[in-house]
Image (cartoon, rainbow, N blue to C red):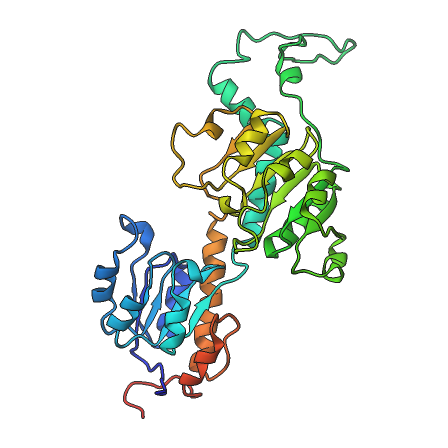
Length: 372
């Protein structure tokens, strides 16, 4: 094993979305930084192109570019990888990096607040028919010549959209969230923030299923642990997914779980579509086993224009944007810069997937050019 040092003038190539402050901080550390964000290109860089591009690069910060073993082998100067996502294995071959003594930094929790916000945005849009109301107005429904109806009497007049059986007040009526039960599947960083919003903001009761989190860890959040996922579904007015995809969680929500949910319950998924058995959600909606759903992720992306979910009035959809906020970029940039700073100062970084590789770095301060 050869020792490594990151000296001043080391080449840093950044294809991830990154904050301007983060880029400047990297430069202030003495690095030569090239910023080539994926948002300003046509998409991911092919591995063959990336191999050439990483020649003489010491640190590669990649958000979505795939980094297999072949790319690492071609990048003879590569000393450090950073993938500012919660799950770097989606882009980086962690086993290959570890075998080559290349630390892989990542940014857990970077999007927790943002996804929790989006989860509740979807939930409110579904339960209170906000998205459907907007769509119907755009299509010309509920529109007409303005009328003032003094239905309230006295000095106050109500301006109404009609009070008949086909009025929006009737056809778009939905439940409030107060005192309803939210069932969280996966008590992750995101799941915990969703629980906090549910309890403190909407006065909801919160239960959670997560075989890897003890009930003692849930209690400070006011959350009751449920040991059986089907039982959680049976007790919930809303089921929201926040688990990671793993062999044990893939397809964890299926026909049995949807059948257990109350027929006026709602289902929200801002995690991954692989957590649901193929066809189970569409079947539950078509057979009225649940009241509605709100979805940000799909088994194939982008979603096909003829996908059944897009034609269902009881479904709210968004195009995988739950983490699309500037604050997420600012947060992951700060986490990555801080961990790189720690490494060059001889300290252990906070967020590294393969810490056993850190011994390949000499515990020395960042060297200035010409020092030895």
